[in-house]
Image (cartoon, rainbow, N blue to C red; front, side, top):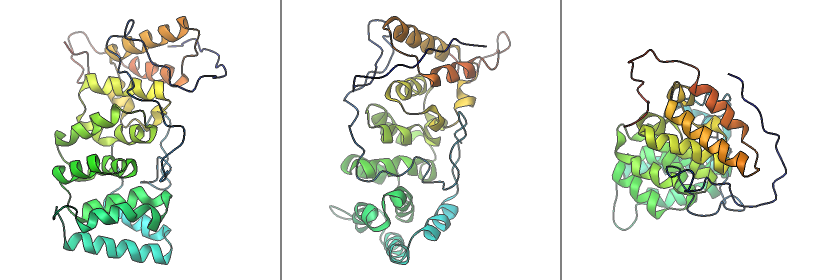
Amino acid sequence: MTHPRATPTARTDSTPDVPSTETHPDSPIPDSPIPDSPAPDSPAPDSLAPGTAPTPGTAPSTLPSLTDLRHRLTSDLDPAARAWLEHALDEAAAHPGIHGPISVWELRLAEAGRRCGAAHADAARVLILDAARAGTDALTRVYFQGTADERRAVLHALPHLVSGPGALPLVEDALRTNDTRLLTAAVGPYAARHLAPHAWRHAVLKCLFTGVPVDHVADLPGRARGDGELARMLGDYAAERTAAGRPVPEDLHRVLDLTESVNPAPGTDHPHGKES
């Protein structure tokens, strides 16, 4: 289906465009302004998978294995950083879990950006969390007590370390923020596997009105396919922006096209269809 494309206009406001609660009672509302500048560690969104930037609209629902991640990371690090990482991983493996007010491996998480560099900090932290055999309780502790950089690393680690939906509260918390780097990590493979349809749709809309490219939404084609409720929400959001004289994000048209890519047979329930 072909959709009319709105002509982008220059932005003069510094806050994200958010659907109003009057026309979109279901729409998620940002809780705080988007930061003006990124946090100290600011790796590229695909830093956990070097050389595998997402194809538009097809971010993978799986990640490279932790073995591959370690091999790629150690190949990229300089000798001093590599030696620090190997020591940190051995230390975490020898003293896993939670010990006292703070575990030694948690201290290494805090050092990772300085030791390995911002571009590799996320991957280093994920490997440390794995070496420490961090379960849902430990990941929750790190997430809520850590910095934004550590929170992002926890979100990246979830698909590797948590098999079930027990860590969804961490994803849901990240989706309530307007930190675009946290949002990017939150809509990864773990959310694709476990986030309920209603919450997942809101996550897609949150990406649209905070400017997170939908390329980073894992398994977007699979979950959006034939989703009439998502199409309705997108249409309402587009109509509201048009009525306000604002441009409609190009990503919105792309997602809308995905929702129309399959017409389910009558009486067939789509696994991510409209909730009652």
